[in-house]
Length: 80
Image (cartoon, rainbow, N blue to C red):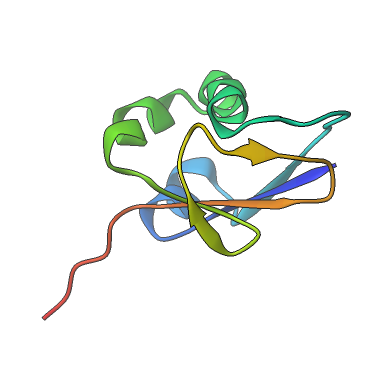
């Protein structure tokens, strides 16, 4: 099982702060995101700007995830 967390506007778009994905073997963040875009098509427009974390460490779409990992997506944060 892979725990996928969403933050800020992504949480509203998905309708929940996290989902679980059945994962049997190591795969890439990109492949997981492709699955998520099928379930939540609006995610596609965020892909170019998303920040990614695997197990609370910044990563990218080529990073690997394994069963039991936590994958997080969040939009860039700005502030003043």
